[in-house]
Length: 496
Image 1 (spheres, rainbow, N blue to C red):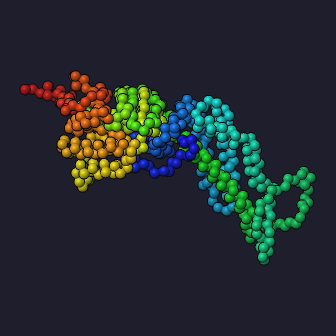
Image 2 (cartoon, rainbow, N blue to C red):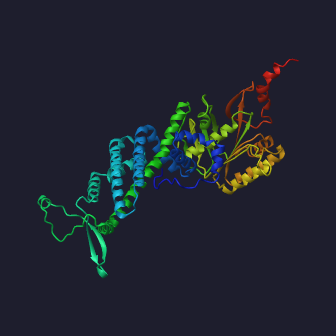
Image 3 (cartoon, one colour):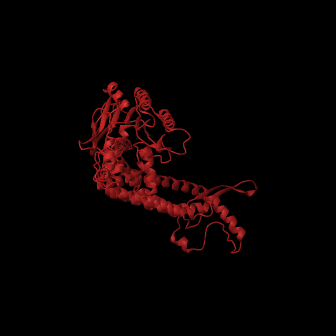
């Protein structure tokens, strides 16, 4: 996920994440990525909302994703190896009833044998498939598996695990302290015995044998053994935890890419084009796209979704006006979703997409009337905008959908104009869908050089194409078209 650090699945979501998911309908995309897997959903949500701001890191992920789309079966195979290791370790964990050094060591040996088997499976995949991957991330991953998990590693692992089963008994040394109390117990390697020694009943040194019913003696002997194996048990348990963390990280980071593969397959089945977006490295704003569409809508309808072409390079404000039910809100969502997909290293739902990297993405969409609200809708909108302003920084992107339409035209236009002007002065990019003609007209007259004005396309017969085209704001949203479509048939059939 990163060239120099691990992905953190436990980090807190960014400010405004809940509104972002709700307003952009991101749950549809996340469910498509998860394909019914809760773990995939959680990782996808964290990754999509955790936007990257370095174009080099975005490109790094895109190259890895390209490998995953070329070799999805191999990637799923690696993922399954990690999942199997984690699940089998969990079963062994629940089999541990007594947390004594001896039981910890016994359980750690069993788990380490499982892990070495799964590491061998990863090494086999690396040896067979490394040449078919081109990205820096996978190349480094497979090289690490081949160099660090070599035959010598597995030979030593098997040897040490065999020794820790103590088939020849437990050999330890100790020193006597005051009162002949044993101290400094150290586990020793048991010497190999020749065949003559194994056949002979004679042993060098002194020995004693416990009676069969000497419970206290067996308990004391067990405690003595625990003192000897304690250091080895702790060291092996730490090694088990280290390898378990490795498998968990492999599972977590590959979960994001498998989610991307799942989404890619769903969008391909829906007939929607995708592209690898180009993150612009310049400090100025920019948005150039061809065939941009809303993937959430494409995943929900059976017909192919219409895309739009936009050339807003160097524009700080995009103002969208035009016909009712012409696709304005859908277009705004497509811009936000594409920006998020680009900044987490994914493909974008477009034939072409180039945009500046944003420091944060925020939404201010109109809300339905809430009977539980203690104040009016305008107060609620102003409170939400106040929260957003506290999170915004130069280089952020704010998507507004019918903001401040809850009051009259004059008041709503003036409130929105002052807020947007202040945001533009702070270097914040704004995309604004509005029916407030006075707002759009004044920006067209005063900010035409720094703004792009789009209009929902309407044919002469009143039908909608659901495409956005460049055009100045008009004083009508053609609400009569919607009225005719809904009521005209009934009115025409009513007798005079």
